[in-house]
Length: 133
Image 1: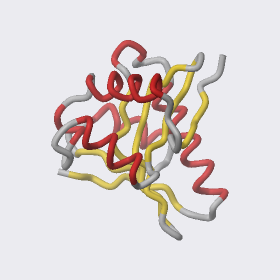
Image 2: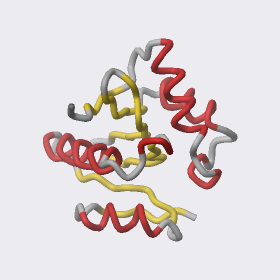
Image 3: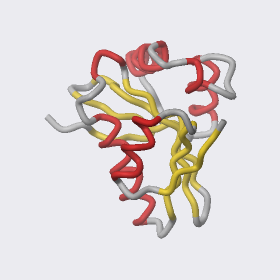
């Protein structure tokens, strides 16, 4: 089955539990500037910037997608540790890029300089990378 890209506008109780599991596996550098995973999720839901990757009715990945007129920025991309290395992050990047192009906007991906695996994935997709400290 395919991985579906969704905006998390009205998450169910199960979705919220899945989001907690996704970001519970996140390294501390990924959560900054938020104090913890709960704050990141709350911010994303409050500002309608949280996007998710769903497979078999469960959320496996999530990110923040800030949309501005000409530029969209994807950040805080995290995939649940149990399902990493299976193309979920790639699917999120590809779909965010497709939607940005449809909106005639460019997509930038915010990645810390020392995260070579994420940098490689974004570079392979020819995405504009915004390095963060």
